[in-house]
Image (cartoon, rainbow, N blue to C red; front, top):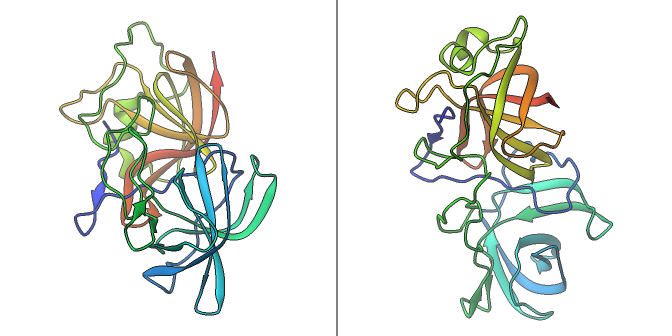
Length: 255
């Protein structure tokens, strides 16, 4: 797996775009508070996630986590590590000035806790569940479908996955094209669809056989795709997590 994530402070955290969101951007800086505690003034559940409007210190802030039991008047607390401003939820058809996304909302001083469902990507304040098939892989050991990668022709004027990964530092910021097969896919994380693509070049041992791509285009596991985009190195999504190399906001065409 090609990501070679840098784990800072011994904590692996991946910010997640919840279902129904539309192109939010992470806040430029971390929240002023490390944690927020207060009473729930409003709550709603949609598409498997629960939103709570929390009153605290004379302010009101929205937070969202995988679906959990809570009601107006409950006291909740959560890590204030991933605020997303100007957030639009398609499933709610509602705009929010800001929403804190977290996987660790504690209700009534620990009487209940918003737990990540099995296979959900880990979030601030949560544990480390197993990633679901198709999620952007976090380690080289992550399983991939047993797909036939033979016969994939190099894109005209393009590069192989192994060439991109092994020469990422030299190629950073440059446009590249690669033809490969989608081995993993996950939609709507941080407003993007995430693909892992391979073309048979490189090796798992050297971690240069797999390339991560974010895009607005849709695809499915097994598709052969032509990918064009700029090589990005040390992509920092905040919360102490970085990608060593990837193609961000790439153009993806299913062939």
